[in-house]
Image 1 (cartoon, rainbow, N blue to C red):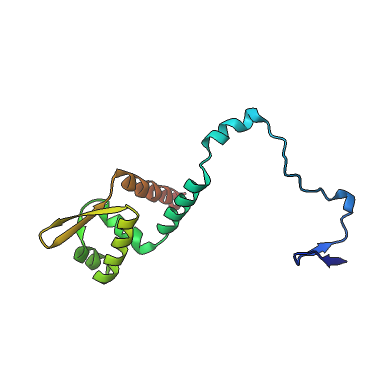
Image 2: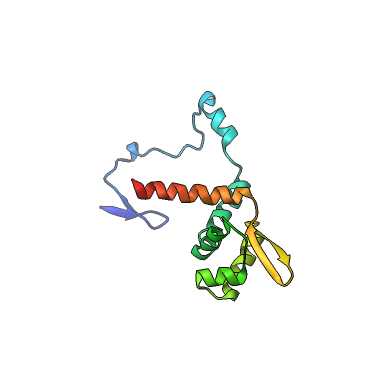
Length: 138
């Protein structure tokens, strides 16, 4: 037999009340074991910013653009041609990538050439690609 609890889940009556442990917000923590991890854990604000950053990278077209920029500077027209995307769509993605400081650009006459913002972006891209290639091989 089961009954509904206050938040709408079915709760079994087969567990004796004496065996149900109450939530205790205070935990016994061995400070010798926890001190080192506490020093390494990132704060909530940084964790949120990193989550947004990685979420932003979860777009296949953005990653394809980054992949082309790992080896050379390219203009919007070249990127659009290689990726079989409209120049407008590529420009939109580049605007987003610039806002996140993943790519930067330089103007040469009427042309604008895009490149990865810095070596951190290249290393991040290469590390993820290498990690995924390892999974494919095993």
